[in-house]
Image (cartoon, rainbow, N blue to C red; front, side):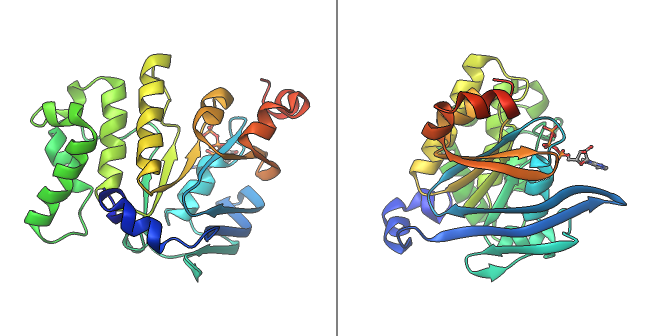
Length: 254
Ligand code: ATP
């Protein structure tokens, strides 16, 4: 999809080993007077799937919304590809190569699958180019192609999630932010969605994922950051977290 998804070999050649793609430094974010993030620092290397996990209200979605330019930090820095993007408007962030698939999917129910996808390429002025990208999404997600003219509101929950991810891919991101992609899905549908996420990642797109369900997160992520009340309290390799029953029960109730 992205340049990366369409031309994996080119992406691999362009990606320096261990390149830090995204870094958050001491990020503070508030909703009005209520502080939601109290100094979050984390980093994401090119090619990784990183999961943000932790209890409800811990600040995971706020982190994604701030990276994607929907919220402005009151303090701290967001460095993407070596450049500061903190405070950039959301459309400028998309233009830099970051796309977000929001929580609860938010597909447009009375628009067709095709129309929803087209909206994801709103920065693209050429209809031929939009159709080329739609074709790439259909190639990756044949089930969406079969439902080309179907209204999005009539898709199953899992199909809507795939559509939301496909729409995010229409901007050809290098970094994909996914907020709770398994929310409301049956375990089988969730597994299918995570399979998509793995496939997208294998084709070169770096992924940061918010996930309530620790087991889901560990099934797809290589590293995890554990949040508690607006702070990162632990960073682990996925394998390391699976072997840390104290951390799992202390912060995650798993
Ligand atoms: P969840 O999985 O429940 O969404 P989360 O870890 O993603 O949890 P956030 O949604 O980032 O948590 O919320 C962090 C804090 O910010 C919480 O205390 C929440 O109540 C608050 N918050 C989130 N959105 C808003 C908003 N629009 N206005 C005011 N406060 C908000």
